[in-house]
Image (cartoon, rainbow, N blue to C red; front, top):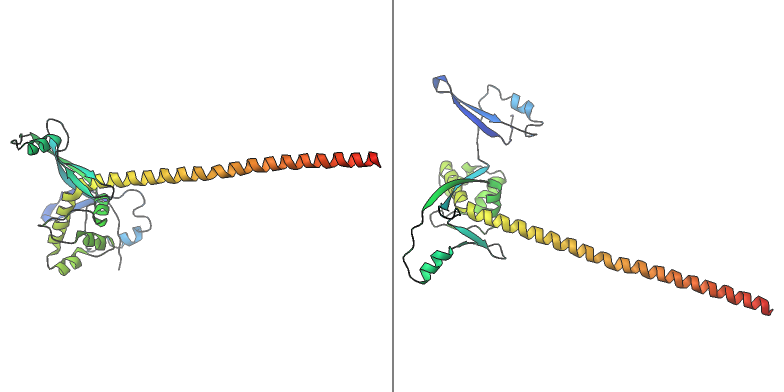
Length: 238
């Protein structure tokens, strides 16, 4: 049985006569290297196709006055992400004043699914009462090759529903995933700089050791000169 797995870009969906739909995929780079023979065997044969987007599309609400996201995030030293309440809203809450109505607009953003999935797998992504599933386990098993059909059967829901729930969860945590990803990259940069600094410090004793060897050689040379002088003196005395 021929089997081919690869990543592609969906370019077109063409509607043809008699209800036929034609899907055009674009494959770049080396995605099909060594797989063309298997793919050619499938021409004019029925195949099972599962398309799973590698991009998470999510909405961000923007403050029309400041052009900044209404919801911002902060990450503590353990990688826990929390929402930051805007300063003016916090002040209004402290003074028990009515909140000012702010004009907003919604913009669609895109994020690599890998970033979102890494955040989910970290165990630090938030929980939602209306999505009561272990998404870290679902994402992990899906990456390892489990089918949505098998996962759905275990949860007692349809495969279509589990795809819908996973997609919705990814969208909800995408904003937090961006903040967590930036924090993680910063932590890795700091760690690398510390390792380089430690490596540089370890070189210093070696330089001092070289100087000590040179000094020893000089002392040895002086001692040889002294022995020669004593030898000359003994000869003259003899």
